[in-house]
Length: 538
Ligand code: NAD
Image (cartoon, rainbow, N blue to C red; front, side, top):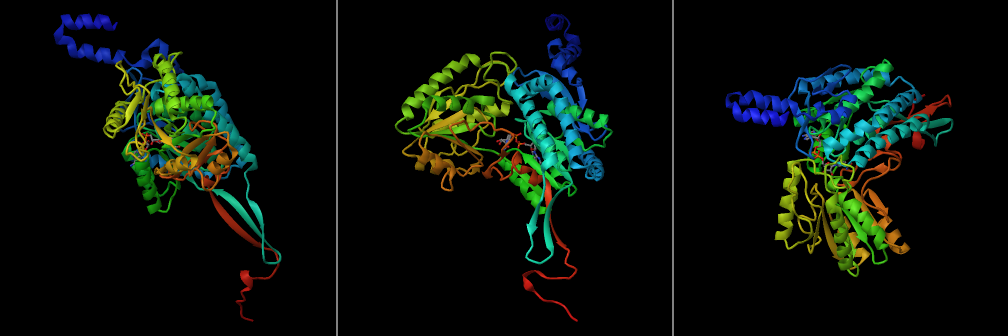
């Protein structure tokens, strides 16, 4: 068809505009039979990007592109600021109903969301891969994470509880109760367009909140498809919009952050944007969860199981083409192992070169980076590293093919505190640093601004306990003998310092979605003040 059009274009120049129009419309991936899974998700060529009971979208229409080919997938009509305000209003109204629903019944709705996701795991995971650029198994894994957190939340709905505290006053009892906050606004980043919403929504809904989501502007189709799955559960259960969506850019995000009706803003994104979001929410005394950038180190002690450390480095540095917040960005190796480790790692990297390819191809292990912006920052960082005296031990080049592909890159010879080493570049670049001891490695691990993930490879118990103790890694994730990359939903996820301090997902992170009430019950029949204070008149 396109070859035919090209032929006509040569012969009939006057009709070129019309033909280009036809070529463009024919080139949306959603119209091609091999992408029929997009239609299985209820997506169309042009999709409304706002949901609050009804679908609409009066803002800018944006095209979503496949980073693996540069081809257009489909378009989404984003919301504007007015639609955001309306969606806030409807979701606040829905809260008035939802907070009355018993927690285990809320859990049952979350269970249904998990089941609905199970039905659509394959096509939704493929869409995550297609739109972000992550490989097939990682796209499937991301949806699995949402399913897992739904299961977790269902259990939570029956067991989350306050406590009873002993009172110093006779015949008094102190209770602690956890109540919902109200409306939770979720702003998410492009690299986890499904799971981050899932972590927040499953726990926030279970604890009695309603949720308004703004996904990243460059992954709008995942936002729409995911919301359609949730909306079907709401429809079946005759529920008001306890979950709503307003796709949009900075204007919509900023309006959500500024809106006093949004009781908690859960923001996932860069440190730079997160700092502004944190300040804005604090200015109006709202609550905030910040899940921001990382600069994660893998420390290899001289006693390490090197084979295992190499495997951990490979996935940690290159998985998701270096675009996870937990990606290994620095490898700090004991000086005795440094040279042999770099050599072995470059050999492993070389084996991956033939596995660079389109994210949905079966053999691909290294997909594209998400956008031209990622490619540009990859190039700029490598140039800067070279100027600073770094040596490119592997990679360093942009792959010449349609789409946004770069070679996974290893850089050696830089100072531990070089500017590029201290910065998060969202691309598959790792700096290998030579340290004299675990103590030195811990100091370097901790000297960066961010504090998300870290891992030590050691067989030495003393070093292991130092690493996890107060004098050890200052990160939120402090692993031993496993990668920095990725996490399970059972543990609380998040990091310290410029990573923002927030925690989502497992453990007791549900408390972040609640307000705590301390309730003193006097069943003595007399009024008594605490600390023996006497204050009365006869
Ligand atoms: P980003 O900061 O550019 O964008 C994140 C979101 O913020 C997007 O939805 C964007 O539209 C929105 N936004 C932008 N300006 C805003 C404003 N003024 N007010 C409100 N919202 C605004 O981040 P990105 O490039 O999409 O994602 C990559 C970054 O996210 C990396 O730094 C990565 O480490 C981080 N990240 C962190 C975690 C974590 O859990 N710690 C998880 C994933 C990604």
